[in-house]
Image (tube, rainbow, N blue to C red; front, side, top):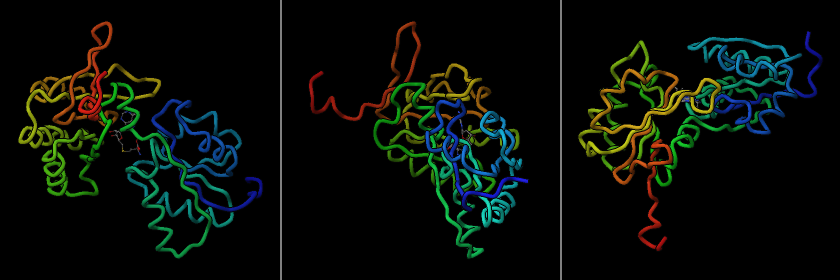
Amino acid sequence: MPSPAKSNGLYIVGLGPGKAEYMTGRAVEVLADVDYVIGNDSYLDAITPLLEGKQVIRSSMGKEVERAKKAIELAQIHSVAIVSGGDAGVYGMAGIVLEVLEHAGATIPVEIVPGVTAANAAASVVGAPLSGDFAVISLSDLLTPLEVIEKRLDAVFSIGIPVVIYNPRSHGRPDNFALAMEHARKYYPLTVPIAIIKNALRNDGTNPVITTLGAIEKSIDEIDMHTTVIIGGTESRIWRMENNVKGIITPRGYHRKYLY
Ligand code: SAH
């Protein structure tokens, strides 16, 4: 049995994109202090060294409501961390845990520990594509109807800003990404740059692919559920680094005001 908790409470913790050094200090501290850690297998595997001496409850994808209920039940008397990849509030566990907590009328202490979300991790490996306003859209239609996703895509592409696509393509819905590109082509020139970033800031990370809206069809097979795609905005451009490596810059507008 676990030792009696120092105090009860629930921590909803974002673990960052993958590599240990991209976790926040607070996330490391909380994981060191709690009695229980709950999460889905792939995230728990990534933090094995931090789980020594803990009670670990492994859950699987699609079992989020069950996981939230279990965490809340345990947190009545223990200290419990429920973990998500990236930021726990961005397509993560924070929302559902707070909803279940509210519904249960429970009054346990809760702390949400933010993490580096995939948009920031992915942007960092290709330059500065998100330097001004940008939008984030998930193509997963498990919880959001596809027609709503399509409306949102039209809304953000119609204002010309960079769009970060989460959950771009899976076996269950191989066609949503191509559909999103059809919406992009209604508003953006074919020269708009696109970055395909798989496993950003993870140990198994690969080199990102930089392409354009006109050539994206050739790279669609590279895109899976471990990938974030950044569609540049109308002002974004390809950035050529040394060794002909490419990235993306979205100028924020300094060139309109300063000489450099
Ligand atoms: N809470 C997470 C997002 C969960 S949704 C966060 O804040 O990052 C899952 C999607 O996030 C994946 O399909 C992928 O699009 C994206 N993602 C998460 N981690 C990633 C990484 N290290 N590299 C690239 N994409 C990632």
